[in-house]
Amino acid sequence: MSIVAAGLPMAFTPPGAEEFWQPLIGEGAWAITRPMFLMVLSAILLMWWLHATTKRMALVPGKGQMGTETVHGFVRNSIGKDLIGSREFLRFVPLLFAMFVTIVVNNIFGIIPPMSYPTMSRIGFPAALTVVVWVVFHVVGMRKHGVIGYWGSLVPTGLPKAMVPFIFILELITDLFTRPVTLALRLFGNMFAGHILLALFITGGWYMLTAGGVFLPIAGGVTWIFTIVMYLFELLVEVLQAYVFVLLSAVYIGGAIADEH
Image 1 (cartoon, rainbow, N blue to C red):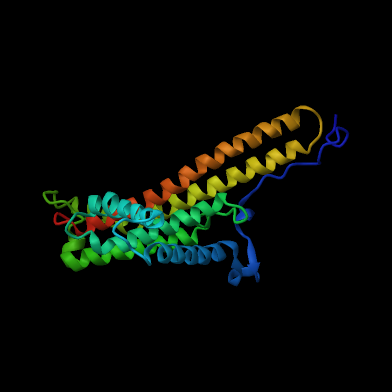
Image 2: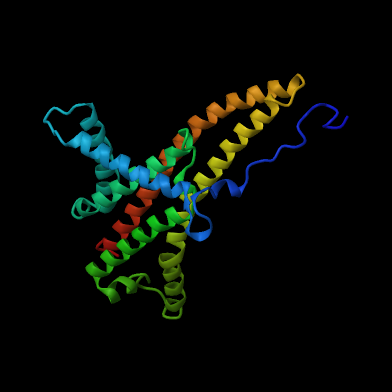
């Protein structure tokens, strides 16, 4: 029996990469897109949140102040202090905190209608954050150890002289290329895949619910039940990926300024 004869829609078109190009104003490279708008919105929301919860600081904090202090304390102590070290971590806490809350809010946009779009699923945003981290950990490392001392420490002591050039090149590629690329792609890839998966469950479930017949609507209902589970799982992934990004950033900064670098 053909699809048309069965009264079903002609075809189901699964979501693809085109879902991530959503211009709001204009066309081409200079278009203002949905992720650009969401990034600006996240900055406004975060500024409002920080101002609203800290403008009346009290010794016994209210719920808002307590929430802000909890998030800040988590980044300060569990990431900054533990991974960079108690002597030098404080100057990096504002950067780590800003990146963490920015990534979390923009990731969570992916499961909140009507936004329904994780900003970090556009590679330009993770790449921009990665460039900031890359510049910071190299600059602070060179300031502390000197240019020659910083780059010279890439080669462990005691190696045979014949191996030194090869090890230096491998470590240089890791520091200049592998670390930043994997840092950006990890965040981008998880947000991209999660958004595609949610869109597939939602559109596929709707297709089956409206396809007619007996079994396809039942399958569509089951699919939408799984969609709720996927939303909860995606929320966990979104927060976890923000944590991983900031965690690795702190590891790189801590390694750059460590005395044994």
